[in-house]
Length: 518
Image (cartoon, rainbow, N blue to C red; front, side, top):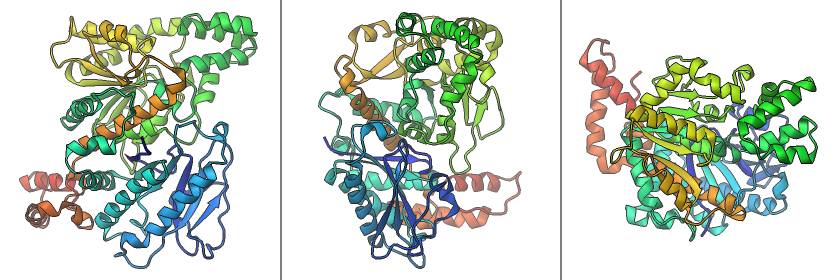
């Protein structure tokens, strides 16, 4: 089992990785788009004879490598950028061997590198994005095997994301070769490819609704719900015996006790929780993989803002309910238990949960409607989570009985539990990543298998539509060049059509295919 190339639609500034490659040129000109990750860092004056330069970062942050990829013009071939990409991977892997797991953002089983589509902006290859992306994807696929490292290729926007997936599809070939490129662990469940194909179809048909639990945020270094409560017990100055006894209580009752103890110390529970979770910085790979799917509707019981950061890429809007129900082309996230943005409304204690039906009845009705009309995919939940039980109970209440064939949702778990599968058989298709019972020593590897699985769903559910009529990507759609030519003629014909005409509707459709209709 080797390293893997992950592809997401995201912002490399914000993706949790061990090391990232920041593209620049021979004058070390770093554009403003990298201000977030370069804040407080000092760049060298020149590269000298080097292709890449390392800027050391503090513990808990990605190591930064500047790469000299600047080329003149807009027709540069990927071969001009390839040596820099290879040198980054080589040097980053060597340097990361000296970094202890405790200094990493998260102890991923393999070192994790982040790369964007180098050269596609001001780097010299802006008119040959298709050829550039094909070369980059092929090279990175070779490097993950050569160095046994995971690489996250971060495309900024729907066009480049769809193009990178198209380039990977050309590399992979037909679906019989999926098992080679998605090299699941020997302990993994044997039907993961078929399950990914099933969920990808639901995504393509706009039937997939994401339910996001706390496990997703763990990959960005945030504590799980139980770990957070354990940390709060320390903040409340509880001794070890009391903390141990408290940990055996229901999580909601733990929060109730901690709220009272913290109040005695002059602290407010919800404000302390918000401060713990409202960390500026990086979202997990799982956030990026989920946000890259074509699903427009998501529900979360998490308080943090990481999914929002992952979803708001390249100007894409996202309405966060109930706080900001603005128009965003139908894309929204329902935060069932509140947000760190409004600590006073966070749902934590037993009384908070009991108040939910009265205070948020309309929202729960929205959830029920979704559960009846769409296919639910639960990620980051334990089957023992009270949050999970609450949502599934809403499904049962809305449905009034067992799910009909094909009407069950899907829950992605890390380990196999036969009794749990029997327990949820009427409601959910339980898909464990590893076909073995829980093992703490394999927890990080099981989480990586989930990332591989979500990456496969993204690959299978992405079409060529977003870039099809953009001439800079034309090399990726040569098989349909005749159709592209016919549609390109329609672009000019409908460009200035009045809003009440059929031409305007056609123009909007062509825009969705990547045309410049301005």
